Length: 398
Image 1 (cartoon, helix red, strand yellow):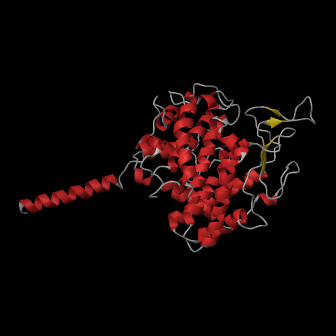
Image 2: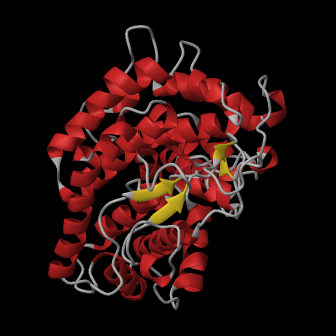
């Protein structure tokens, strides 16, 4: 063989061998970032096939006699409020971190159900481009946001009520973090003929009305200014809903709130969240707050000035927060603070700050850990405190 042909053949053989090593011959521990969502694609199709034949259930399906609202009004009760043993017929008293199992939770459960169904069906469509998944989703969206007999009123006047004290509270707005992936699902399927443009317009009008309520009503303002995870969740929700309806004013406001209020007042210079660490569930609340901050940052991921790169003058940033919590997600037993009074053993699960942070900061260790954690948790406390359960709705290039 002439030398030049030998050299060419050797080069081609080397390329072929290297390519095989880099793809099909990887060891089980080798990580390929482009395959980070392989398990998630399988998961969402499995869940979508489970959910696709379910009928809608909205707030009109169940009512509590303790609600001051009507049949179309969302109602929930303060989780940590209990009957007073010294005055059983009087106002409830608080037991922080301890959930009262006798609370009315049917509306919250229905909204979580909607979130699960919406997230799975829209994600399955993104993976397969099968519009049958969108056809299965449409009745749920119409029932909640359009149909006059079953839709929910676009406010939370009666959320987180406390017997003998209040018929509703601003902190009840945290319940609608369950609507974020519903909003993302609508974004994922709009433009298809399966759901008419007029119906999409009505759905967006509902979210626009709700966004106006949560940004102007005294309950919404109180929640925005509440502090700790409630303020973070207010901004996270407002940004997601504003993105859906194209409200740039609210989007700008939430970005500024993150930079000038949330990071400076809630994160310490070591990356911890002091307001959460002093609670009775410091581990779960710290995870929850960081998930919410990362999700808020993800809304602006494609902006020229994105929040992942933002750092306060004294060095606080999302990356700092992840660096603080990551070791205790990798090894919960290393947690140096008190254990949560409830659900300690249910954490951690597949936290979105690991995914979003791993992608933003090119940290393979975050992504690998995220991909090993449980995505199908079934504890209600964990489900309601996980703002992102269907990540394919939040990232590009799946």
